[in-house]
Length: 133
Image 1 (cartoon, one colour):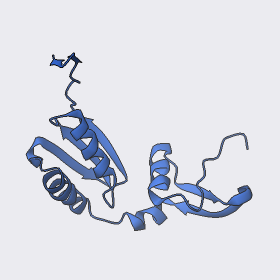
Image 2 (cartoon, one colour; image 1 turned 180 degrees about the horizontal axis):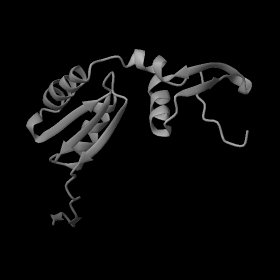
Image 3 (spheres, rainbow, N blue to C red; image 1 turned 120 degrees about the horizontal axis):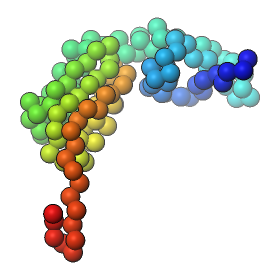
Image 4 (tube, rainbow, N blue to C red; image 1 turned 135 degrees about the horizontal axis):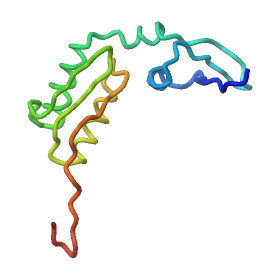
């Protein structure tokens, strides 16, 4: 073979394997153990059993538990859609830090395969000797 083969290790997380499969658009990943020996194959079907959670349930957790209760932000400021475990979030967070923290937390919601961050981040403030512009 002349093509580099993308593999995972037995101790890699399910999220890592799902991310690779999604972004590289592959249906299977070889699992390679110590010494480079093949110990198994992970397929999309294998991963989907872990992520077998309805999109509406994922969205409800993101809107209610993450945005509203954890960050105490009005969910109406954001539009959250979920399709096949892929979350797209749009809106305008009050600060860039808040937006980054929300997106990071969304990535860790069970059933989320990927996050499309389409937030409109506010420009960073510039300060000189305590003056903000």
